[in-house]
Image (tube, rainbow, N blue to C red; front, side):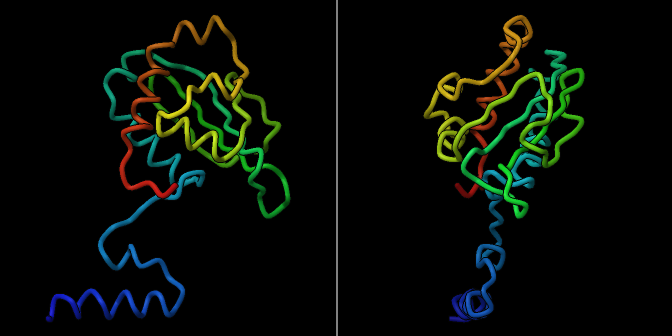
Length: 153
C-alpha cells in the first residue's frame, strides 16, 4: 500500500498542476522534434565507434515543414559533424545553409527515425559525392535513431 501511495500521490499532484507525470515515475522521455532529442541523439552518436571511425564531416539541417516556431517559421535543427563527432546541435532557421537538407513533415521525420520510412522518400538535398563517401556513417546514424529509447513521438 505504501508503494502505491508513494507513486499515486506525486503523480496525482503532478497531473493536477499540469506537469508531466513521467518525471515522477522515474521515466524521462525526450520529445521527438525538440532540441533535447537532437542533443541526446548527438550524445549517442558521439559514443558510437563506427561513426567516429568514419571521419564524417558535414552539416545537416532538418526542417519540419508543418511545425512552426513562436515566430511563425518552420521549426529546424542544425547539426555539425567533424571527424566523426557531432560538434554542434542547435535550433536553426529553415533557410540556413547546410550540406544535407531534409525538409518534410513531422510524421515523415518520425517514420524515418523509427526506421519505417526510407529517408530518400523525404527527397533530401545533398552532394551525391559526399553522400557516397559517408554512406556507411549515415546508415549507422539511421540505426542509432531507430534504436533510441525513451522518445515520445
